[in-house]
Length: 333
Image (tube, rainbow, N blue to C red; front, top):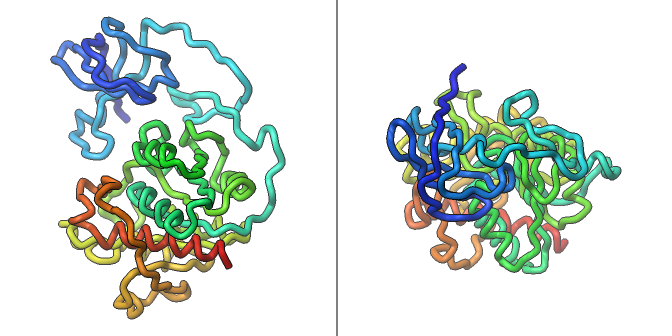
């Protein structure tokens, strides 16, 4: 195990926010770094920090940033408020949250439609697909810990929070920073079911993949189906359909989606497509649903997946929006 750490000095504030973008000076030159203000307090030019350089040193795409680990000029940081559940447990960055399980009893069953998203880029079109049918429906987004762990990192979440619609966030497992915290996806589902009409569950930005059958966090769609079924909810899956990916295993319907459905899922799910050509694919015992994608201003949503735009992966985004529309119609019945 290895980690890249360097001392640095803040040279410039490029953009302030929940995730502040910095220019920092190091012994190896100037670098950009991201800074989580809710964790580390405010930051100013001239302050000394320690940055994690691991992702940049590895040349990663998703998550390829330096992150400030500690602001040496903001110490000490002392605990305040309620809660004793620790996330990122037994790591140098473990933090305290107030989990809802600490303060309230949660239902043992749910009855909501739950949309399961394999990639974070499905979240925005799925949500607007819901609201295209009924703009008054309240959506609860459960961010799992399969991708980014701090919800503040998600621009998609910020966009939906500013949309004017009812949108609540829950962070489950080791993900953190949602409006409400949960210990695992089961308690997150139970919690969201009390407050929301429709639940969307999926990892934050980024995904772990190893070019192998089992070595990917995308398979959480299958375990998500199992969780929804065990609690009595209705599992609705957004299939990952790509036409511009250079990797053959992701052409058309991704092998990750197929593995989740055929080899991981123990319960049943509905899988939404927009084109009847997909009726010929064998996804038994799951039910294939054909739903027309809603008329949205997809270009205005500034959609992107794996660095590709709506024009490059239109069916991917249309399918996510159609799944949201289908879930909204389920709510009306």
